[in-house]
Length: 183
View (cartoon, rainbow, N blue to C red):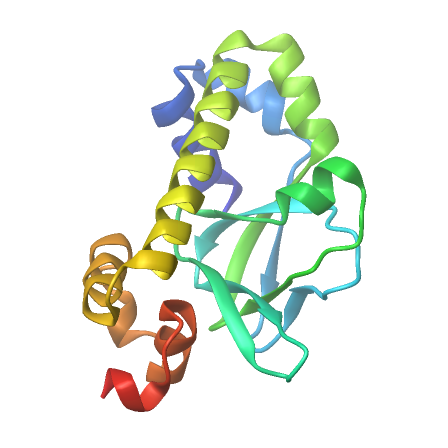
């Protein structure tokens, strides 16, 4: 999976193969089974997880015990709790493997070191952060103002193959509707 992450970096950052080799020498990958947690709510998030193979979900549980899926993370996506990782605070979210998943573990020190040494990486990281903020704003807007049908169509646009990989109740949770409404 490290090789897949290296290829991703080369495509997205413009770093040379040699620079990427030097940069990624300390990175590790780890495989999680379906149902394994990479992060539990209440823990401090230590990593950004680059999904090489498989699927993650980030979710929260409200005071009534109902799950709300915040994000799915298929291949070549990053999943993390940025706020927890950056501010070293307990996370409000859990991250779970929806299927067997192999990730590259990327800690804050890696990001800081890479950004300090390689301006291209810093630009990539800033762009990724801006994209993340944009996606969150779109998601909030959809949840607050769009119909269930419009939210579903946006889900299909964002995650084209997930309707075949996740149960309907998870899609409904992500959309903020009941599973019956999705049927």
